[in-house]
Each structure stands twice: as structure tokens, then as C-alpha cells.
Amino acid sequence: TAFLALPVFCHAAQAAVEVGQPAPALVVHQLDGSSFNLAAMKGKVVIVNFWATWCAPCREEMPVLDAFYKQHHGRGVEMIAVSVDRPRYRDEVRATMKDFAFPAAMGGDSDENGFGMPSAIPVTYIVDGNGIIRARLSPDQTRLTDKVLSDAITPLLAR
Image (cartoon, rainbow, N blue to C red; front, side, top):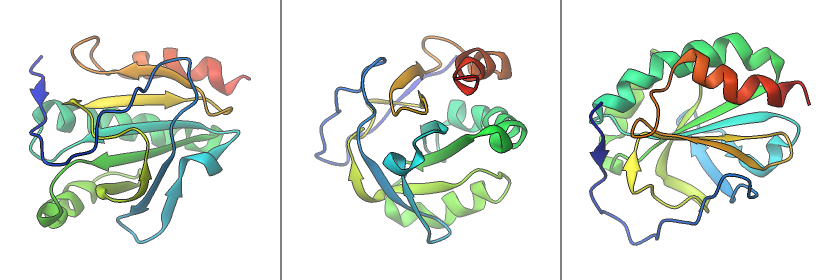
């Protein structure tokens, strides 16, 4: 699987985002204008996905994420896809997202992003209902599939 390094275009340092630790703050303005605040999602399992329009592995994962989101949203699964594209590519991000049900935001439209900009994409974090990061998924470790998502998330929904 190809794994693309993210070009450096901001000075935000990669945060220490560790599995088993509380999720950092994430407050972003979604493409539809509404606000997403990870801290307000207590009690829900949240998928936080960092991606870009130019990233082929990111685009490959999106239908899998979309199908999972559609199937499990009613059971308490929330999601935000944070694009690390530069602001001038907002139209491309919007065009890509029109095919998917889950909400998205531009990384540059964050009021608070304790995750920082990832060193490589795609990367997906699974945050449990208590705000603890329970999984970090990236193609250099394992390919994102419905089974991988189910294995990571279904036990969290039962809590």
C-alpha cells in the first residue's frame, strides 16, 4: 500500500496523540458551516480521519468509512473527516465530500486542533464515549476495512 508523507505547510507540531490517552481538543468548522467539537461528543464513539484530496490511500478508505458511518451512525457513531488540503483546494474537498454522508472540515478551519497536523496520511483515530483514544489506524500498519473498523468500534458501542 502506498503511504504518502504530508508536505510541511504549517508550523503546528505533531501532538503526542497516544492510544489509551484522552483525545486532544478538536473544534473545527465543518464544510456545511456547522461546528464540530470532539469534547461535546461524550457518550458517542467518534471516528476522526485526517485525509487529503491528492492522497490515493485516503480516497480508497473513504467509501469504507462512509459505509461504516451510514450503518452505525444510528447506534452512536459520529465522524469527522479533517482535510489537510491547503485552503485554496476547498472546492476540490467539497466536490470529493458530496459523495459521502459523513461530515468534513478543512484542517485550517479549526479553532482548536490538539491532534496537530499528522506526519503522514491517512490516519484515523477511534475515540470512545469517555473521550479516550482507543485505536490509531493507518495503512502502514493495517489496511482500513469494515472488519478493522468493526473490531475497533463495536466493543466500544456495547459499553
